Image (cartoon, rainbow over all chains, first blue to last red; front, side, top):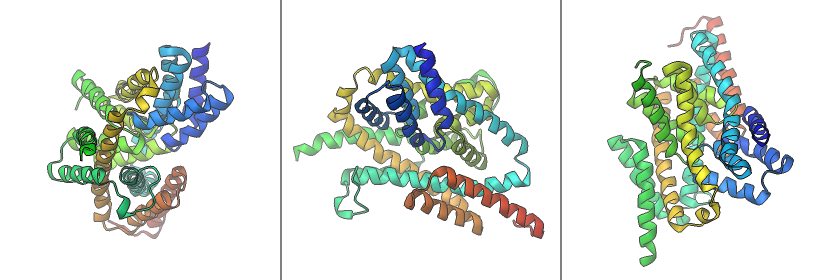
Length: 190
Length: 190
């Protein structure tokens, strides 16, 4: 019964979270903290922190975390599968439409409008992450004085290596993580 | 490319490793997917990938999962979609399941937080590289509408923080209207 409730709750969250990961947060809070009381507000805040720090989309992290806290591994499976179900069905229906009608001129027109918008949205998300990496949480505008030099160095190094050698980006991210540990471990010695 | 065991395995391992190394979800994972499936494996062409992202963004659920579903579905049908979902969902599922058991210690660990700081800078570099590539592609076509859409969408998302769903909607309509108008006036743009 608990499994079924978890599945159903997250099915609805999956169905209504339009606009990517962060759009799911208010829905999860409403359903999981306020309506069903699966988590306290404190646990919910921790969940968001953990979701930010671990790989994967925030919505998947939340489903797994809530399922696990409420009913162990079975609960985690029920909640995660629940979240994925509705988007999966809808995306596959849209994909079939896309492959069938993409040569139509109206469809072409719509896509011509969407492509540059997608670039802009990725740029906007990337700039937010860059700002967070260089100035931290408070991120008082682009102030050169308060910049985190270590992060800026890692960013510049990563960008140069990427443009020059075109390696697999996973190595850049992993490498930056390892350099991060080394630099922050050495820093207190000076 | 073919729907053989090798394709299945490659699809699963590629989505699994990309998902395992992306922190923050959504638009962080998308540039990595593009790099892998468009540039390395060449299973999908650049324009098709941008369309996938637009479809993924306008469907409910997580952008990362939706994009993976589309890539999997295009590559190897329903089985491909199932493999891509599993590959994308499993890493965060495993990580969160483990963390939820002892999350308080994890949150305050100094080594982990140094690694995460470094990784954020690395991710910012990867996104900057991807945006540069895609933005240059749009600018190179030297057409007014796409460049205008890119600029306005960026301002709308980053400066004015307008809901992404509205941005996608308006840009799609703008594209459709312009193609309709072009057809009526009989002007053939290249």
